[in-house]
Amino acid sequence: MNQEIALITGATAGIGQETALLLAQNNYNLILTGRRKERLELLKSQIESSFGCKVLTLNFDIRIRKDTEMALNSLPEEWKAIDVLINNAGLAAGLAPVNSADVDDWEDMIDTNVKGLLYTTRIVSPWMIERQRGHIISISSIAGKESYPNGSVYCGTKHAVSAISRAMRIELMPFGIKVTTIAPGAVDTEFSLVRFHGDQEKAKQVYKGFTPLSGKDIAETIEFVLSRPSHVNIDDLLIMPMDQASARDFNKK
Ligand code: NDP
Ligand code: 8X3
Image 1 (cartoon, rainbow, N blue to C red):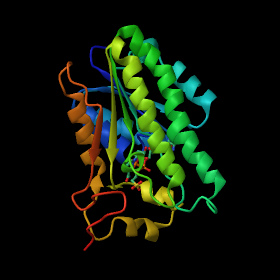
Image 2 (image 1 turned 30 degrees about the vertical axis):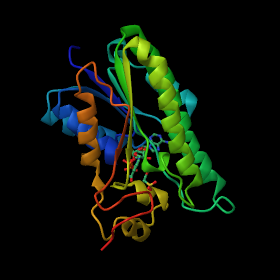
Image 3 (image 1 turned 120 degrees about the horizontal axis):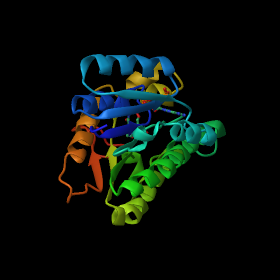
């Protein structure tokens, strides 16, 4: 294959889905992952019918190490030549203080946002090292820069994404592999619906009274990061809605 290959985890919704659509327009072949198989198949057929690129879907739960390893290792050899890994799959589960939060929610966030990212990167990075090229972009958050009440574990996982990426940047530099973290503020995706376990009303309130970022805004940021010349590495990029100046400061009307 002479087109570059991008692997996007969590491509069934939000930022991952918008990034898949934008990278398809930019001529990447895509490996798209997620648990919702029907959404992956729909996106694949939408992309392949609109753009001249190939799409391979992998349907697995990133929290489960052996499933993640099996899915990635089962890729045909030509698809292992991954140029871009976008560690995007992630979630917040619940919004509660440490003394009463649901421990299952904590496990879900740690297993997805931290361990899932590590399982994926552990498999893909040696393939990049072999080819002495690659770019790993991980989606952190404003929650990876600040901690806010009731978000201790989500904030902890996103701080971990930033800390892990910082070390990876140093480790992978000698092999010509770029490492970037992108840290968005509020993005209007399925994120809040997932955080509030399907409560539509609560999810809607999060984005009320101001204009949040969209998944497309983050996809365009990823495209910007990817399109820098080979001597430039964007290490870390914080992107906020105009009306959000910190995790907790909003200019809501
Ligand atoms: P969405 O809920 O819209 O999308 C999340 C994606 O992650 C889905 O494709 C989902 O796929 C996938 N995912 C979640 N859990 C798993 C799992 N166990 N196994 C495989 N895939 C999984 O949210 P966003 O697009 O907003 O979130 C994308 C990333 O951006 C996350 O890491 C989030 O923390 C981060 N972020 C989001 C912000 C926001 O305000 N929205 C702000 C800052 C960062 P499926 O359910 O099909 O498995
Ligand atoms: C998502 C943004 O502020 O809800 O990472 O943590 S926030």
